Length: 378
Length: 199
Image 1: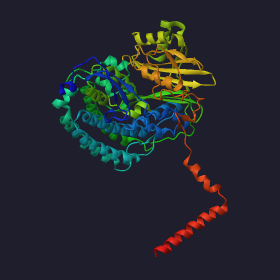
Image 2 (image 1 turned 30 degrees about the vertical axis):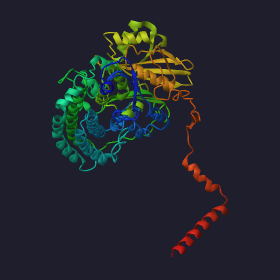
Image 3 (image 1 turned 180 degrees about the horizontal axis):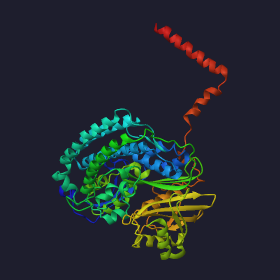
């Protein structure tokens, strides 16, 4: 009897399984309809929309400045960059200037948030595969960042810190030193964390050569950010479509090298994020150094904001290139706003790459792409 | 290449399928050109394949509803990783029957993005392999992001709106003043009695 139940052989019969919408490994509310024969999947069809809050429609109902808190909810794990995208798109549309100190504060808050978002991504990925320890370690680090951001803007998750024309508040006294102290503490942790899991034999066996995405596929299916770079495409919005004060900062763009298997496998997607931590820390150090020489002005509030026309802005968010397209018709509200996010495009590649994968590897694939459900549905 | 050069090159390839190039200025922040909807697939093919254009990243497709002009505008944002340039293409569709060829066969990223625009604004993408609703429920009536959309009062027996909790407070204001006084006096008395009993 037991041989009949625990068979890994393909019988030729197809079974349809539901994964989600409340499955913990789908990182939110996503449903996958899995067509499987034994352990081998034929296809995993994503079914999204469970978290659709119509943020784009809300943008048409409130003013340009009033929409800012909603952008937090586009991607709540990395809310700063969503703030930044909206602010940049509206500033481009309305010909607004941002003071230099405001730009530095934006970059600092973005990078802090990127580090904390990658903490969740890497910790959750290890946990999905079965290693629970790294998650606990890395969430402790994330708490420190949350504390820093709370001191900066009063919130720990949905920050609402950036404003059209600058940022909401200057950094409080002593915050810069606390931030530097945290960087001194965090830098060695990266290596410690790396030793803890990335070189682990089981971890590598599980992820190397799994769901290999080539550079061409990644670009064609619209993967962005770390997922794109892990496939060997050397592109970073911060460097190639420069915005804010990034041209003044020196950093490298880590790309997948296929150290443990092929370029673009799940392990590469994991490791690119570890490398990005190091770059973010580098950027933070430079920005915290350069901000001292700036004027105290951090926000020029627009007096009249009734732009006409359209504009788009791109920002390197934690989950990659986030695009915001905004059109105005001369009113106080946006006529149309559109957010194109990284996780939404990643849904299609899951469907393509799940063919021939084991059911258990689907969880690793989803986790390696760093999917955040509200970012898919918006 | 900058946008003007891209447009000139594109025009040499596809002729009058693209027209009306508008350079970035005070209002329009991104240069764009218009495309004849029925020839969009040829134009997209050239944008994707031509060695001088090589738009390998389909960034975004956005549909805008303009009821006054009786048109739906579809905006495509494209980018080239290889050559580091971007371009914006816009198409004007009639509002009562907005149909434009799908470009899913060129860019895989187009599939879900086109589905989303179909779902929210009702743009038909001809040749799309799987044009279903994606964010809204499958049997949702209407296209919610059109400007003239009116939400039905209920969906499958579930109310789509609910009364404001503040409206429930109005009941007390409408009651005659004597009744209000009685309620207050009664409450006060019973409380006093209760306290007396406790003692």
